[in-house]
Image 1 (tube, rainbow, N blue to C red):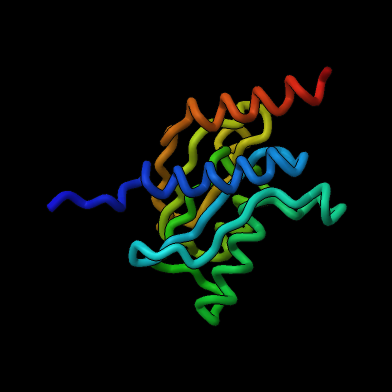
Image 2: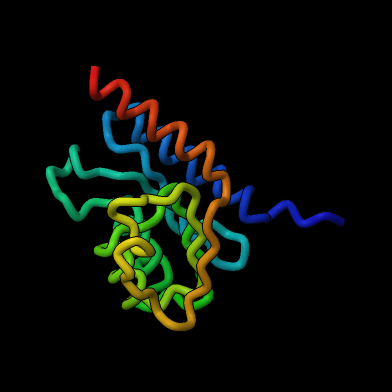
Length: 147
């Protein structure tokens, strides 16, 4: 029997969150956190709604997952996020000790890889999962904003 719980499967769920952000006028980044193939947190950017520069999708998911687990460490968890995390989010991911980060599109200007921000040494990183879909959504958003 084929495992349906692939990185692409969960990234599609993160993309659903990004589309919610898009529809609400937020930068379309979506994130989910999974443990044992179960989604324990889902979020999207809320910086405009909350008037809070720290209300990134990843930050919202980290908080929700920690509340779900009842502890601050996210060992055994995987974050799926549509855009490469920024250095602020990478710092929070470092301290959470999350086991795996899977992201879609690269952020060539502000992403943690570009800025050489470190994640926890035990955190596995997979990049480029459904990157085209995430990138297209981001480009559509900014094309509308620039009109």
